[in-house]
Image (cartoon, rainbow, N blue to C red; front, side, top):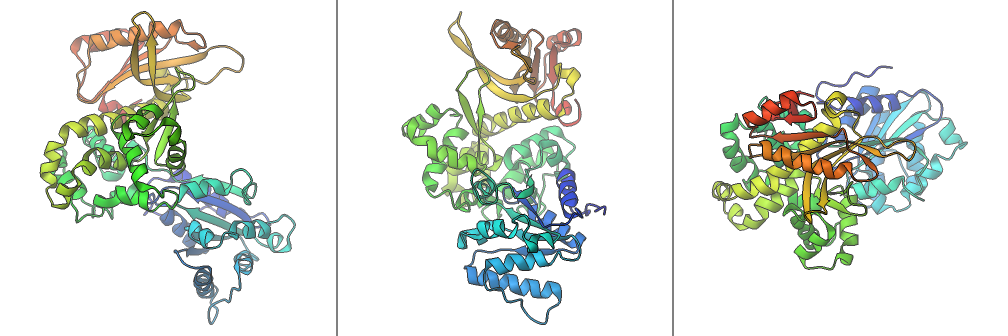
Length: 493
């Protein structure tokens, strides 16, 4: 059975194909799938449309007691099967068996959305599902229910199939629904100007709901409207996007000490990406940060990226652009913003926006381009890993911050790992010969480093401002020099 993706779902071709394959599996025996992702990414739309397209059953859980949830589920089941009244469900064991019974005659998609709400009110629910899906159990064997559990609490959903969790080994599908990448986001917003697309992406990222409900379909009407759009759509207390960054922390039940987590995120937004830098910024010992950093990672709000040039060192970055914007621009001026002085705050915040929001976001866009969109000829091979790094120069006892380090795949034997490219990325600076010379010096240092093969490393320079005529002329005659402008980021390889 081929399921055509509904026209109301933008992008998500891979996710829809995986869900359709899972739902159409005609083999005997009930199966389990887990779908996760931060809120506002369109998971509910995907699953609701899947259930509708397959004639399946969709149930959206709410925060409620076990008895109330069972009552609501029984009512929904009664309507679905055309019963004269609600289906009586004495406990979760009978409820899960009732869901399995829906697939007795054919494959039936059964979606339980916001599953963490049910599991927190009924701690044994994962174990109940584990028992219901025991191999050889008659209720499972006689069923072709395709049960999909969905949730937005990433820390909870991540643990559902991990380690010794009851459902480990039971799922045939584990599907994350991530935000749209920067190219897909530009298409979703309808932008054909790459500079405008990058500026908006630096604030709202690739979360689909921030284009629709949260700004009432209000989009910048060209580059000249960008500043006014920020004031009326993002810094406006009457718009839902205004408080969204705060809600992202408040709605995850694992983030209990919100003041501490806000401080950690503020430290990272200010450019303190190392554990020591974060500790110094918030006035805590580095050893005290293990728990909050782990919780923020599990919640999908922080990403830890190992430094490929310094063993055992890593940097943290905020995964959600809106949180970076809130910490850098909105939080310091919250009182003024609540007094509807958003336009004044935005004018004053331009330097902070450029340095703490737009610059880092542009660097990440370039790294994603190198990882996902640059062809192998451009970077000299398939890219396996891209990150920022710090390179130490022993001769001058100085450090070089590299905005981009692209590594190839690790060799099968003990040979050195190919270093495909190193790069410098600047949003508002014209790049020229001195920037290229700096990268060449860094490459010379890396060629001498054991464990890496940097001899063919490309020198990548990316700028939204452009490049000098001298640099363009050099690049035209040197295949090891790669210049990346916004047009190439959004449409080239």
